Length: 99
Image (cartoon, rainbow, N blue to C red):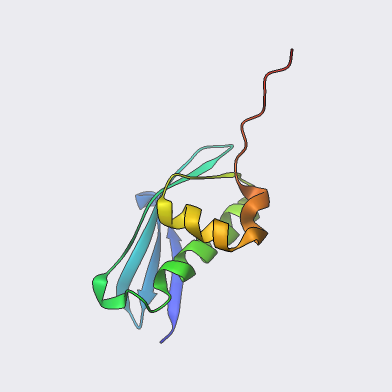
C-alpha cells in the first residue's frame, strides 16, 4: 500500500491518496509567516494503516521546507509532534514583548 501525500493549496489542505483513492486530508491556514494545522481526517477505511502519520509527516516536512513555523491546533498534528521531537523546533512560539 503506497501512500502519496500532496499539497492542494487552492483547497488549503494536504491530501493523502492510497492506490488512487482519497484516504485523508490535513487542513491548514497559511500566512506569510505561519502555518496553522486546523484539522486532520482519515477515511475510516484507511484508519490504522499509517495514513494519518504520512499526512502529518509530509505536512510538517513541507512547513519546514517553506521555513514556516507551525501552530498545531489540530490534536492529531499536535500529538504527532509530541511523539516526533524532530519537529519541535518548527512549532510556533509567541515571543515575549520586550520591556
